[in-house]
Image (cartoon, rainbow, N blue to C red; front, top):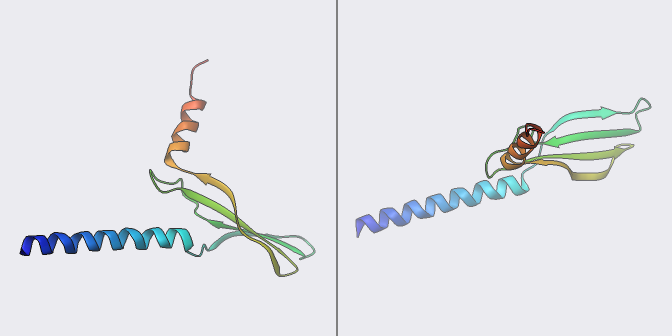
Amino acid sequence: MKRYTLVAAGAIFVSTLIAGVAIYWRYGYYVVWLSSTSPNQNYTVEMTGDKGRGGLFIPSKVKYNILIGGERITSDRLIHLVTQWTSALNWLIRNMPG
């Protein structure tokens, strides 16, 4: 009986951990890592998201925000998405003979 309790507790812990990480990746706030403003200070473009290459099951997303006069016009629009599979496929295409 004690063994089943330990297995059940482990299963609950792992499933809670996976759900928490998935929710964070889906709804987590991305920090602005690049920002550019027009010379007359009217337009601002902010780049957010991951700067990494992505993992096997974890995509790397780059998003952007556009601000005009300090007012946010677009928010969290997807501009680039990379997974380990697309990165490997791009490498394969570039290095194919012929």
